[in-house]
Image 1 (cartoon, one colour):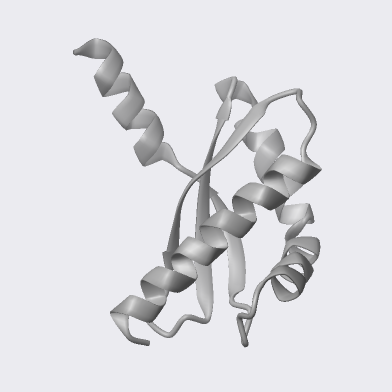
Image 2 (image 1 turned 90 degrees about the vertical axis):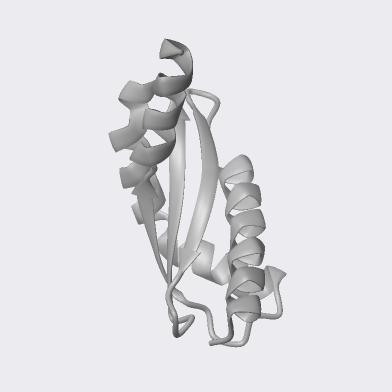
Length: 105
């Protein structure tokens, strides 16, 4: 997959994931989609997120994993992506560490 197409696919998935999370989560925690990594072939996508408060990360991950089939259907209905990639959700520890470094400095 060309680099430009990969970036466009990542941006589309980022926007769709953010909209899906906004529409399907409760206000118990703030869940934010931070970035999306698409594989070289475009068949796999890792969607990274953070939560506030931090102790809700595991609950949010379980929720998002349960919602993957609904999210894939949402992608299919809301975009013109031909082949919907295999989606996995991951906690963005890199973003969490960056925020801690900002607080320390």
